Length: 166
Image 1: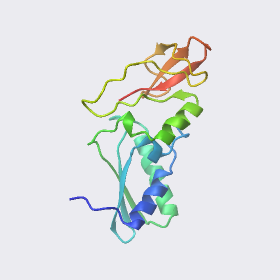
Image 2: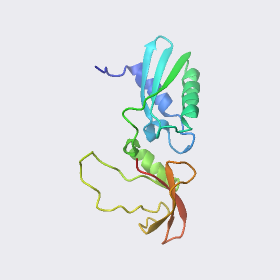
Image 3: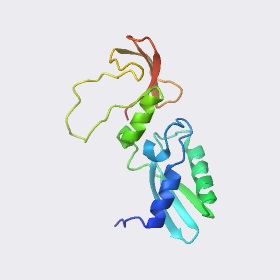
Image 4: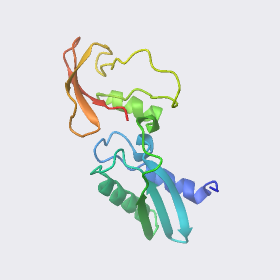
């Protein structure tokens, strides 16, 4: 049985969630949806649950260290960050604010997957974050990180990253 977070846990989750993603610093860990929870285990002792975007994500270590630093700066002496693999992270975990920020940063956000067994999107088009055209082409399945693909808009000819759906 899961209990509701305490006000202190909510405050610490806001602090940990405000940490920028090391690979996409335009997003916070909360906006990316990788922060799963903060639990006060005892006075001055906190455990943070973090789910990587994919197994083997090299940024998890940096995320953990950055969370530890943020909570230490807030006066929490003992911080443990645990990796939680289930339920797996999905691009549906990216907040609407996170999707908006990705677009503003020039990265096409992932398309929402919706509920399992739910309706299938009628369009598989990826919208250019520069001009809005859906006339885009895949240049490479991988970009600067494994979770992004490199695409180009055939309308404005600008290349852009696309955050792949998972």
